[in-house]
Length: 304
Image 1 (cartoon, rainbow, N blue to C red):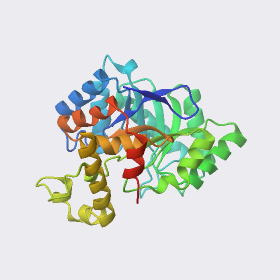
Image 2: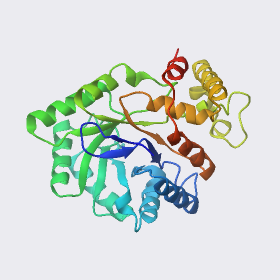
Image 3: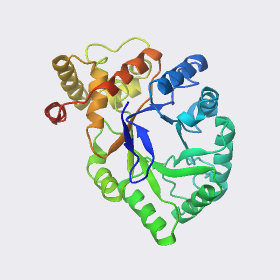
Image 4: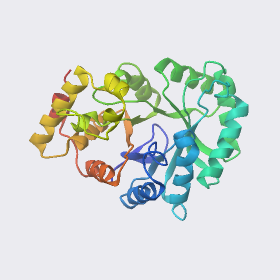
């Protein structure tokens, strides 16, 4: 396993991170714990979760799996997702959310605490002040944001600089061969300001593995959800999956690994977060750690 610095910090994270959104919902607790243990055994140190995954069950599972191995993990969770009740990123809700996550995760501290989404109802100054206090209390060590636009991240960095608050050291966007919006503004900003990128959905929900090219597999996410099909199985997605499949044949590698390595070829990316549903999917993803995608292949795959 190779490791990269998280932005300008001294924290090193594994190139491949384990996303846990399926744990406790699509993936049983027993299988989820086995996947986490396999990740740690393989040198994966970045475990990413959120307080809303499976209604909090994912954090419970991660906490159980890390018993006796907490020091091996860079534990990242997310909170403060806005709700109809307006909880979001208010000081009150962030303090409650962090305490609840600490309990579910069975830990005294969170390595990387990320605000889950932009909250238009709460001033950023309030949110950053609260996160700064939580760092001073030792409950979290680094902070980041998820699903922020470039202008939102830039505003947050400016407030932290002016007010001498802790700054966002990471941003977590959706990024893959199909969804490349972060390349326009978010990635240049991240590289300029030393903010690490934790890219989620590098497989585009499984589309880039090629499993939807010939037919929709029974029991798959696309098979179960016609609305998901409409949003994900687009002509652009099919074209990207075809390019990945061709590269997989040339390089004699699984298509999923090609998609992950393409994501990691972008110098802005610190880690690609893979969210497996099964042990077999996770074993396949881990294989991407053992090699590097040639630059000419990355360019060919990325042609739009």
